[in-house]
Length: 347
Image 1: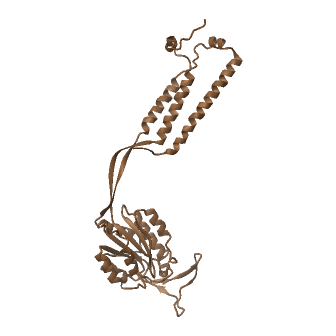
Image 2: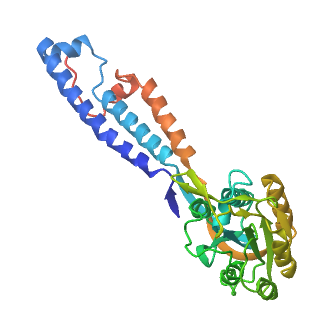
Image 3: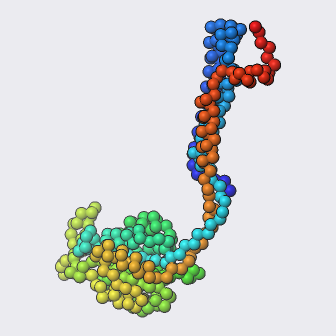
């Protein structure tokens, strides 16, 4: 199978007819100039070794060199062998808490931005694993289905914010339940769920759902974002803090990291709790955890092994240029003696 890597260079072939037209115009111009200078007989006596064929041959060689150069730039490739590429990895789902408590700035720049930063760095360290994203607050919503497109994952990740889900709360149980639908039952890959949250105001029987997820082969790792000292929840307008969230008594609400809930969830699902305040520590811990999980083959594709053949055309191009440079426009003596065209010479 023949393919061309840079087809845009085919447009350079249009230069060849332009060169030929300019050469024809030059021939007519020279012929007209010579006639105004002297007759054909006199010119033959003044330049007896002048060849009429050599200039045509030189321009043909130049055009052929240009054609070979264009083909070399296009880089034709031939598919010679078929190669099977296997992809092995783990199905990873990120469930990210987007409740209003994640706006707290007790960890810079904020809990939600820190969570996105953590997931982004984890994605940078992945290889052939498949990833999905879930956003949850008072309820859980799918953001990105299982995919190997990390660029798309980062794009959806960047769009996450605490205003995207109107119902407030921290329905971790809904997120776990939704995550179970992300995994492909036909491909029995090892399954991992990362829950990134401050663990506050969780709703529902989280422990039983985590236990059910573990029975389906899903390991749940929780990442706690925030500080146990806590901080207020800012109310912003156009990125500027206008006030802080108040309770029914008019007191400023202080939201705190609740690691106990996250630790309990991880323990129920054969996972581990990870302190999320230091990005480097989190990414290193996650990489170690994933390396210890047996990877499963979930994709095998065949690709043609293409080999470039531009060098042949580039070599021929140099040969044509070499001939064009060293080919003189005067008649070759031994060819002239052959008199191939039975020309009669006038003395």
